[in-house]
Length: 248
Image (cartoon, rainbow, N blue to C red):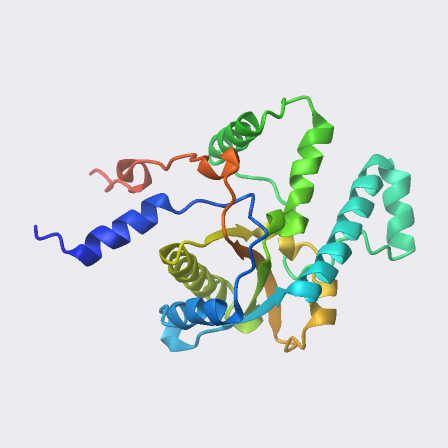
């Protein structure tokens, strides 16, 4: 088998990419964001429909969105502590703490996948020095999602609703292309499903076409030297993902 320089570069980028959970304060220029998007736009999609749109926030707009999302997260956390009566009151008063996302980010993980999820979470908290029983520290770390982990730029990914799961599939391919394009330039990323919990602030900031639904966010910036950015949960072996042929 002939291994070219391009093959080695791609394999390297795929293996060194990490979900960055602490960014430096260094800004990302608009020109650099455009260059990354210009590479990512070549991602394949169903019948080349490209059923996604991207909203980019930095500077004051990013700070405003961060403040609004943090306020909603803090209100939701307080609501959880209020029990059934608190949740009922929030529903009746149409509290902004209630999720208004286009997709439900709250769900039960299948039993088959739960061990991987838990192992990843426990490993991350171990790197951060967060004890399993330290709910306050766990909450602070979760809250960091809505601070975009300190990233100077955040992207919000919207998908066309009529294509259902296939627009989500195409958006996933686009996101991988974008993350690799960023990695190739020394930047870091963190895809954040949590940022789909509240769509209201994002829709108020951008003129989003009504047929497009908020799928997730993506933090973009220069990785800091924080130890959390070296965390690598690993991946399953190829043999584990393959479905065996039926016998008989």
